[in-house]
Length: 333
Image 1 (cartoon, rainbow, N blue to C red):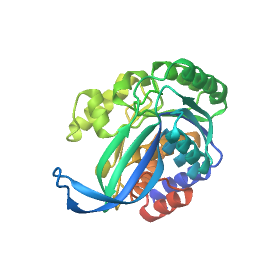
Image 2: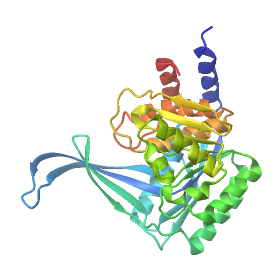
Image 3: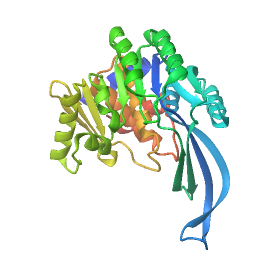
């Protein structure tokens, strides 16, 4: 029997345990708007392309995309966050409903706009992005309502994802309640971090920064193996996290675990069209695999395969259990 076979069987067994896992997703809900078109001329007003818009589409971003990834893999995510009480907020809620997401914990806040990222894409290439958002911390009555839902619903979950895009839902107040409940229940907390909030994640199970975020947090740019090891171990020890997974694009992923184990995972991606939302996929699969009983290396191996699937599509995307199993069979972990 080859050494790869037991690992492959472990990964398949973990995927088989994905179904029905109750995972809470706390974070910033966003609407991704795409304007698709083509360019045939340069504007006479400025040296910029004129994009002739042919169609418009909407997808979930941020915490909503994390929840959609979990749902596509057979889990039962509970989305915890806030949206504005505006047309975009209503559009976002409709998109949640279309994907069968549990949104009892999505609070309406009239004091803020719904976060919308508008991307103009021409010939499958993003030309420009325009954001409409508030970065102010969620507060007042909206925060009180969100925390009540967190306190009521989180104890019934098997894992927690913190999806921090710096749009106000994740701050010391929300994390204190959510992390306290997760620790009391003894389940894993997986964090897609925002560098400016790095100290608030102390003691979590795993952080999944990309190499730019990790380097920024540690004040050291990752340029080679030595700087990667310095940043990865430094971040893990600084926050006393059980693990840190640094995603590195075409260079794969690097896992740093408390106790000194280091695992490098080469990329499995063959085609890269768009990395938008790949971080959402990584943290969702890691969290789900941990809830299904996998260890950190196997959870990250599954996330590596899932990321290789979603970056083949333009825009945020999800993968299914069937696609994940096919990727495992095709490439061997």
